[in-house]
Amino acid sequence: MSRPTVHDVARVANVSLSTVDRVLNGRTGVRAATEERVRTAMKQLGYERDIMAANLSRKRNYAIHFVIPDGPNSFMRNLAAELETHAQVALRDRTEISVSLVPPFDGRGLAAALRRAREAKVDGVVMVATESAEVRQAVLELRAAGIQVVTLVSDLSASARGHFVGIDNVAAGRTAAGLLGRFCQARPGRIAIVAGSMLVRDHVERRLGFEQVMHADFPTLEVLAPVEGGDEAARVDRLLTDVLQAYPDVVGVYSLGGGNRGLRKALDRIDAADRPRVVVHELTEQSRTALQDGVFDAVLQQDIHKEVTSALVIMRNLIEAVPTDPRTGLIHTEIFLRDNLP
Image 1 (cartoon, rainbow, N blue to C red):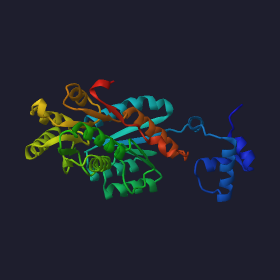
Image 2 (cartoon, one colour; image 1 turned 90 degrees about the vertical axis):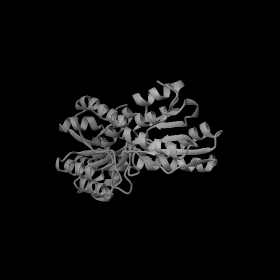
Image 3 (cartoon, helix red, strand yellow; image 1 turned 180 degrees about the horizontal axis):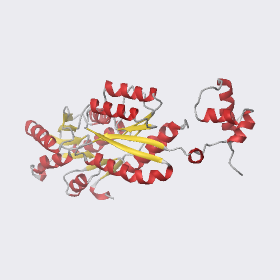
Image 4 (cartoon, rainbow, N blue to C red; image 1 turned 120 degrees about the vertical axis):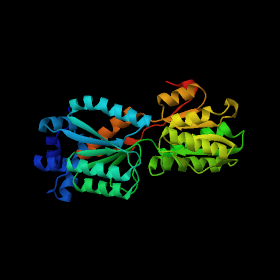
C-alpha cells in the first residue's frame, strides 16, 4: 500500500494543495477551522511528512548553530569533536552545522553568542545553557526572529526554548546518591559535593536529586554544601583538599561536573585505605583510568552521539513545524563500574 500524499490530504480535507502546504509549513492565511480539517485529514490518512524529500524538492538547506562551552572540560571537548564529525555527515542531509565556543558558566558571553547567531539569520540554535536573565532575553529575541532554540545537556528554566535534549539530571543525581549511599553506609560521616557552577541547571538538578535521596535513605551521612570548581582541575584540587582537611570524616565525594583531573590529584594524596568513595559524571580518558585504578567507584555517562543526533532531528522538526514526542530528547543515563567498562 502506497504512502498517503499531500494530494490525498487535500482531497479528504476538501482544500487546495496550497492550503495544505501553508498548514504544513506553519504559514499564516489559513482559518482555524480549515487548519483543523487539514490536520484531521492527515491523522485519518496516517500522513507523515517526508521532510528530507520536501527540502530536496525546494533545495532547502538548514543552518543550525551550536553554542557550547570552551575550556578544559573533557566532556565538552568530546562534544565539540562529535559536532565536527556530524558536520561532515550532515551536509549530505542538506544541514550546515556551525559552532561557537564561549567561556563556561558565562551568561553574558552566551547571550552575546546567541545575538550573533540571530544576526547571522540561522534557522536554529542549539546551546548548552547557563542560567541567566540575559540568556533568557536573548532566547526570546531569537524566537521573535523566527529562529528555533534547543537546549542541550543543561536546560534553561522559564525560557522560550523549543525542546531540551539530555539526561534527566534530577534522576541522575538520585542515582548517584543511591550508589554512593550504599558504598558509604557502613562508615557514617560526611559527603562532599564538587560542582562546576550552580549557575547551570544540570548541576543544580543533580544536586537536588542527590540530596533528596541522601536525606531520605541515608540519614547517617551528612551532605556538605557544594564547592564550585569551575570545571578547572587546579581549582577542584585545591577546594577538595581544603574540604578533606576541614572534615576528616568525609567518606564520599560526588562530582557534578568536570575538573576530575583535580579530583584525582586530591585523592591520590590519601592512603588507599582511607580514601572516600567517589561517584562522578562522564566517561572520559581521565575518569576511565581513575575507575580502573580503583580511585573512582562509579561513573554516570550520557551518550554524546545520541544527544547530538537527537538535537538535529528535533531541530529539523521544529523548523518544519513537525510535532515531536517530548520524550525524543531524553537520553538514558548509563552506569559504569570498573567491571563493565566498554
